[in-house]
Length: 344
Image 1 (cartoon, rainbow, N blue to C red):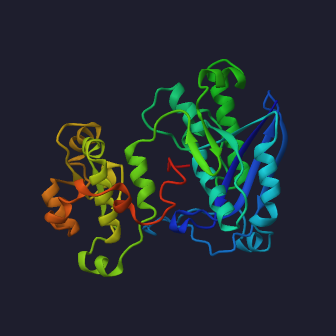
Image 2: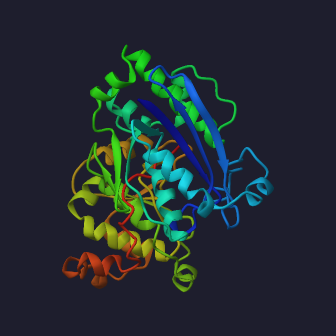
Image 3: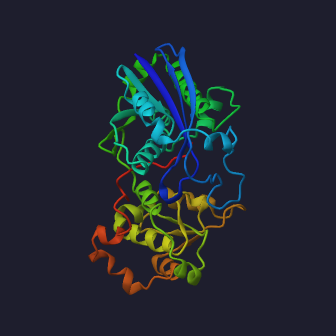
């Protein structure tokens, strides 16, 4: 048995589609002895955009000059290699926040008109979350700190794959088992890719993650954005509202994105918080956040929310009679590549 740990970096993720610029991997035996390690540089055939969405930070700094990527072969050339690596028999595949990497591969298969291929990928982020009974997923750098793994070169794909391997090794040491025993403790902590569809085997996908995925595919209407002045404004919903009125939440996400606003799932990052009917984890978090100097969130009810976004109450009341398809009506890819957007 061999274990393959992999990681991907992208030149940009415009329109919710990653354009791969590197595929790094580490292959080990059952004792975590490294058998092979390599970083494959890939010409993304697109421009690089490595800043966050507000461009208020330095963003990602890749480990190689852009010229090295642009002088490399493209995904079409490396497709057979990547496919073989991920589908090799007698091998288990791992990644950290691997759902993102899976999506990137599906995106480039679609972009280059290549056949999708089937494989499973365990997620070290989910392994840690389940074993430690955490509520949220932890970034790779945080888990490296947890297991005293020195970090010197994040965002070099093969090095991130190596760090993923070290985190998994740390989990094995912590729970005093080998990797086979660790996977017996969390047998469903993986994603399955079949016919281009991603199946989450460890849990149902939260409504928040569905809304985040949905929001990626809504294109801004510049005329509406100019009228409402919501660019870079963040909106968060009560989980109680999302769970009881998911169709309404989808409609509101679409409307605020059309106007340049953002849906977010973190109360501390929000400018406006839409209350629900009952208390939930986010409403409790809101109470804790209010009064903090670095938090400027304002709680509003649905009428206030509609007024801020610029949606007529009469139009919103029609949502209950609308189909999900008419609410989405953006792209038929909206839920083809499902689930997580988590931080690496």
